[in-house]
Length: 115
Image 1: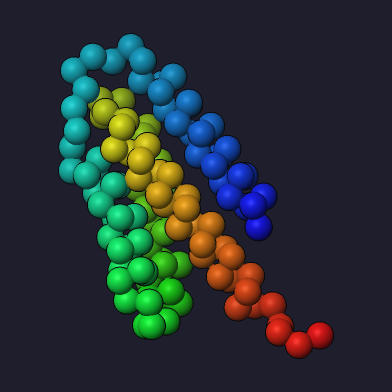
Image 2 (image 1 turned 180 degrees about the horizontal axis):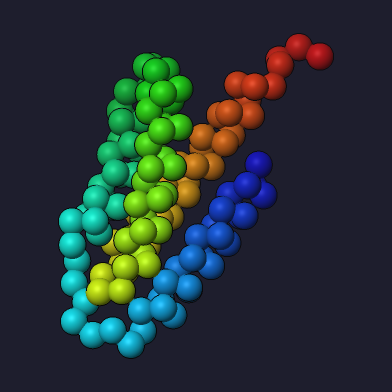
């Protein structure tokens, strides 16, 4: 189980390094709505997941759709040339955490409980 999170973390770290290297020579960087959205979407999903713990429809329907969407949005924001990367990096790691949770829940839901 730890291997899943380690692989996702290393993948995110690799993406951050690539994005940082790509946008080094660009000046006049600023935050746009994509930066705020790439941070806000995973934070909203995490808050919904822990504020409503008894509603399983959030885990079953909302997380498998929202976490890949947050991941794609964070990667898109990272690779924009005139975009500051701080909020997108935080959003990327939060969305990778959510993807790990979705993978673990998926493994436990698909694995039979009796031998």
